[in-house]
Every structure is written in C-alpha cells, then in structure tokens.
Amino acid sequence: MAAIEILGLEKTYMVGFWRKRPKRALQPLHLTVEEGEIFGFLGPNGAGKTTTLKMLMGLVFPTAGGARILGREWTDPDVKAQIGFLPEQPYFYDYLTAHELLEYYAQLSGVPGKDRKRRVDEVLARVGLTDIKGVQLRKFSKGMLQRAGIAQAILHDPKLVFFDEPMSGLDPLGRREVRDLMEQLKQEGKTVFFSTHILSDAEALCDRVAIIHRGELRGVGAVEDLTSSVQGKVEVIWQGTQVPAAMKALGADCHVSGDRVRAVIPDTQQDAAIDALRRERLRLIAITPLRTSLEAYFVEKLQHSQTTAGTTA
Amino acid sequence: MSARIVHIAANTFREAVRDRVLYNLIAFALLLSGAAIFIGQISIEIERLVVVNLGLTAVSLFGVVIAIFIGIGLVSKEIEKRTLYTVLSRPVRRWEFIVGKFFGLAGTLVVNTFFMAIGVFAALLYVAHKFASPDAFILVALYFIILEFLILCSLALLFSSFSSPLLAAVFTFSLFIIGSFADDLRGFAAMTHGITRWIATGASYLVPNFSTLNVISAVAHQQAVGGQLILQNTFYALFYTAMALSGAVLIFERRNLK
Image (cartoon, rainbow over all chains, first blue to last red):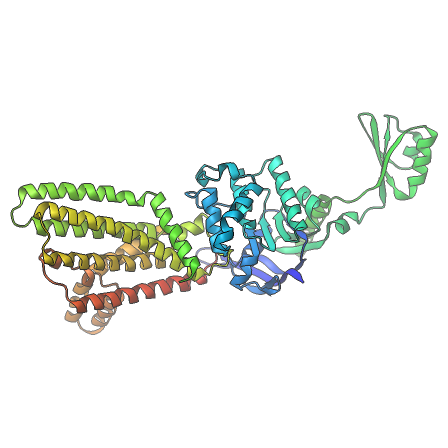
C-alpha cells in the first residue's frame, strides 16, 4: 500500500490588495510515496514544498485535487493519529516546559494516559532533551527547539512522519543525529517524507526523491537511478604527482592533489589507462565509474525548467 | 465533551495563568480594600451601596478587559506564531480547537471572578460588619457578569477568527459599548419611523444586550432579582454565545493558515 498518494493537488492564491490576481503556488501534483521509504521532497526556497506539506496536513485548503494518506482520505481527522509533522522553523507554546509540551501533544494525539509519561520520557531521551525537560521553551536555543519539534512529531509512534526542513537551525552534530534518527525510523518500518534544499542530506538518506521548482514537479525517482545515469566516464586515481604522456593522449582530464593524481577518462579507455599506469610503474589507488551527483541532477532540472520558462515567455 | 476540548481548554487556562493574567487580582484587591477603608471613613448609611456598586462594577470591568484582550489573540496569535500547525496536524478538529479555547478563557474568567467575589464580600463585611439576606442577590449579579463574559469571549473569538488582533479588539469593544446601551437603542427604535425604525430595531436585537445582564445597581439597592429574569438571561446569553461561537467555527473551518 502507498503511504501517500497525491492526486493532482494544486493551489492558487489570490494576491494583491485592490485588484486581486491569481498566483499559482502549486501546479497539479501527482506523487506516490511507498510505505517504509525515506522520500526527499527537494526544491529551492519558494518552490512549493511547504505549501504541499501544509495541504497534506489540512492547514491550507487546495484549489483542486486531493490525496490519500495511509490508504484513507487525507481530510479524515483520524488519519492524523497515524502521522507526525514537524513544521519549518517550529515555534511552540513557550510558557511550557519540554515535558509539559510533549504531555499536551500526547493528550491531543490520543496516547493513552497509562503510556503517556513513559512515551514522553522515551522521546525526550531519544532527542537528547532529558536533562532540560523542566526548562521553559522560551529559554531554548533554535537547535533545542528543533529537537523538541522532532520529539513532538514522533511522540505518538506514527506510521508516517513529515519533516519540513528538519536540519534547519542544527549544527553539524545535530544534523548527523537527525539523519541517524530518520534512518532508525525507516528501520522501524516507518515512512519518512521530508522536504529540504540541502542536497547532501537527501543524497545520503533518501530512497527516492522528487524535485519541485516554481510549483511544478520536475523529476522523481530513486536516488541511485538519478545519480547513475552518467556519462560514460570513469575516475582513475593513482599515487604520485606524475601524469604519463600516454594518459594525456587518452584525453584524460587530470588534477594533481597532494601525492595523488585524479583523472577522468571515457570508460572505453579504461583498460588503456590501466596499461599506461602499469608501464610507468605507478600505483593505482582506485578506478570508479563517474556518477552524477544529486546536486548536478538538481541543477540540471532547475536550469532546464528555467530555459523552458524563458522559451515559453 | 471531547477529551481534546478539555486538554485545549486546560492549556489555555495554563497560558493565562503563566502570562500572569491573574495578577490583575492584586490590583483589584488593592482597589477594593482601599475603597472600603476610605468609604468606611467618609460615608454614613450608604457604605453598603457604594461598596457593592464599586465592587461589582470593578469585577465586570476587569473581566471585560481580560475577555477582550485575551480573546482577540486566542486564534490570531496561534496562527501568527504558528503554534497551531502542530495542534491541527493531530487528530484535532478545528471546531474542537475553537470550543476548547473558548472554555479555557471562560474558565480563566470564572476563576478570576470567584476570587474577586471573595474580595467583594470581604469588603462588604468590613464596611457593614454583617451580611443581610438581600446580599445573596450579589451572587446573581456575579452570575450575570459571568454570562456577560461568556458573550464577550465568544465575540472576541469570532472576530479573532478572521481579523487582526487590533481590529478584533475594536469590534469587540464597540459591541460591548453598544450592547451596554442596548435598551436605549430599543427605546430609540421605538421612537423612530420608517426605515430608520427597521434598522434601529434590527441593530438593537442583533447586538448583545448587556444592559439586561446588568443588575448591579438593583442589587446594590438590595432589590430582588426575579427567577424569570435569571432564566431568561441564562437562555439569552447561552444562545448568543452559541451563535457567536458557531460563527467563529464556520469561519475558522474555511480559513487557510498561511
């Protein structure tokens, strides 16, 4: 069963004060996220990621279209007991302590009274807030608030978790911890849908990604598929600072860095390159097919859309 | 009542307490004790009248200020600060949120009024040295004041559900003022003719009739308040509150939270 089926969800806002004019925030979006995967929703700022998430959460109403979450209509309030949501730059009731906040959210999520305290303590420990659980949130740093936000999203043991820019405001260690947490959630069989514009996070974590730009879906697929569609080139690395003439003759693009040389050559020249290194008695360190990075794919999709928009205009 | 409504109401009450709303009780206590001592010294025979009048009016005004200034932010502040996102992404219906907020604020005002009422009776005991049986009607006046708060809370919530806090404050306060003169408005309507009469009559029945809920002067003069008026005011206030709350829910159910 698909965890999320987005069926032509679209949103047009009316902007302007006197003469209202329509501004399309999201073109009809069709997207399916399977159960148990980590799905990255990528796009630059203002692409429509948060609008999509808000519509799925029932915070903003779509102009048209619909969605199914965990096999049920997304407007069914009861389905929300099965989902967790971390908004972008979350802000909470700052007169509450972290413990009180989670206790309150546990009540609203329908966590039974007998399990509530245990669940709250577990989640506080999981995000590293146990020591400051009695401190009012108004005294929390941005990173600590983000942790509290993650805690409230997973508090009620949801099957599906939506994170909107979960790494925002976190230091490198915090980002690493969130990445680990998301992987743990996947291992527990949960589905994670997260939006980000930090592509390295998406590349490291996601099973599949979708790229959205100016409210339009530009590409969707498994990270491996998107990054393997290359180029017919291999990267050869050997020890030393010497670049044999035979390598240059193969059309290698060489860079010397420290005591290593990195060369990119067409994959058809791979055997000839190995022979050339052997003849010069140079030590081969690695030879790997060159893959497109997710960033390269992302930039290509964005540039393509801009070119298309320019042509259309 | 849904458990979620109770939790939202309890959290709203907790917010008011932690935001030091109940600190107004200190100002109220100072005002009333000062007034009681002063009146005890300068007035003869009318201490009781003055203390009841002043006390109940202060209870009403303090509560009105709290009802308006907290009520107008109940929804808009949650939208502006985005605290609502993590509430409505749970199995919480929008109407439950509105009703929970209403009961939270109403609860705050009831508790506030309870402590103020103790203050009024203490001041009365100080100046009159004993209670008389007509003093029981002070409780009826306090009950009517609470009914007034319920209407105001629901109106503040209604305006808060679609406008900015400033506009909501202006609308609610204006209705409070107009509603306090609702009987005069009806009298004026009766004196006019034609379309003016229609408009004035319509307006006089549309605005909340706070003048019928004001029995402070009668109670201060130790006059009885009839059972029929209690019943009528209870029904009227609950009906008006339910209508205003329904309006707030209808608007909020359709609102995009940007």
